[in-house]
Image (cartoon, rainbow, N blue to C red; front, side):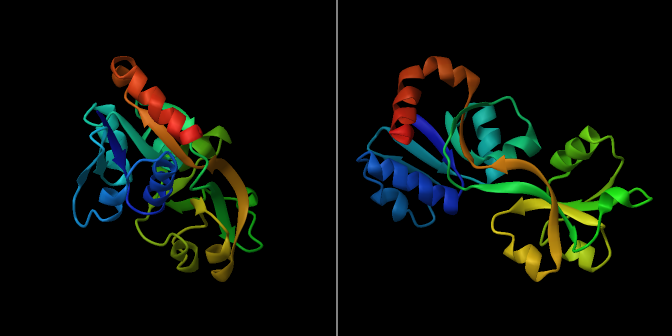
Length: 203
């Protein structure tokens, strides 16, 4: 039996569709109520957790595999294997600033607001730029409006929220989508079960 860690929401819904397409009865998942662990056909235990915890559970082997966004993997940088790009949950990491602002020409250390400080730091270090990073938990678009930051780094899907708040994309960092991750040890001990799951997802 494989233990699969999932996050609730869009990634959960897309994963369920893939399982259903393979003929797996997903009624227990769809009607799970407040259950945090759901069994499917005595073949899979599906565990629900926050995105960061999905990575942690896979890292420590209490979940064999997990479905999580590439954004979380980039931010956490943990020793798990990405074995499949699931192609859903597509968006991108972008740098955005107030319309008409060229942050790269500002004669000062710029301040960046973000939920992803590690990704932000790595990106600007790659450009040999020293930046101040302010970690925001809620709507990062507020930071430039309130003059807390010169720009933001965030996930962008359509760009509509940026436009409505007079922000525009000035750089793209990486393309993001859902990934199937696996614990390195499990890849050896449950090789056949994992290969079967991968075949379900790519069929």
